[in-house]
Image: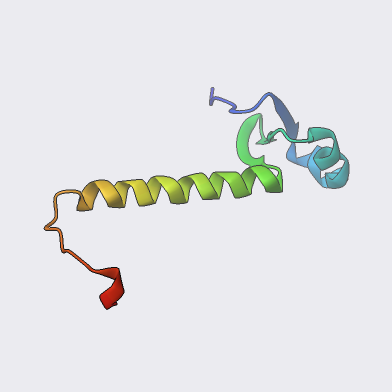
Length: 81
């Protein structure tokens, strides 16, 4: 059985009946949307999704910094720019 990565879940049929109620009831928590008792999607609050995207961007930038850490350094004088 596939792992459900949230404390709350709902069937796709129930979600179709009243999506606004599901969103309201979920509050700040994600909801697993199930199809045939398997997670097919996750309903994530907008604020949480925004934080996730910010975090992913931070991780990508950190990886870029690690990749460039051993590159040759160039001295720059800010007054000359």
